Length: 102
Image 1 (cartoon, rainbow, N blue to C red):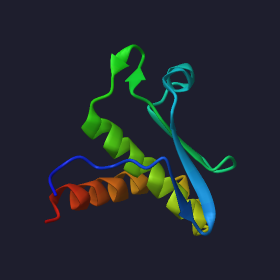
Image 2 (cartoon, rainbow, N blue to C red):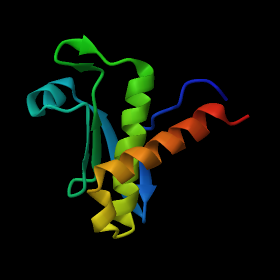
Image 3 (cartoon, helix red, strand yellow):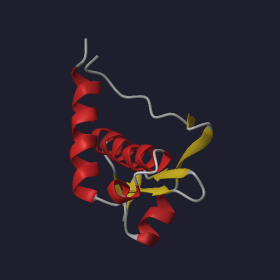
Image 4 (cartoon, rainbow, N blue to C red):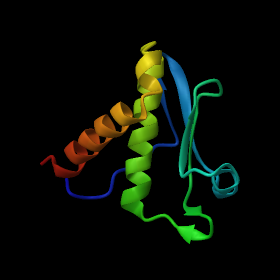
């Protein structure tokens, strides 16, 4: 593949629709470049943070990080969904897989 990853507008996990939105103002206001909202079933990403453009690879990595949070939530793995170290390591491996598969 070695190309760009397509970030969807929505997808389903456990028969529940998860929306993916971009909201630069929300991200800057709350101090993050991505968030998984388990209650609202929304992943929020940003194109700009604190006035600086987020590079595409960073946005893709952030998407995978938030996706892992959502997957773990859909599995009821509440102890893992809040484990940032685990989530980040898993997301990095998934991102590497997606970027290097042929």
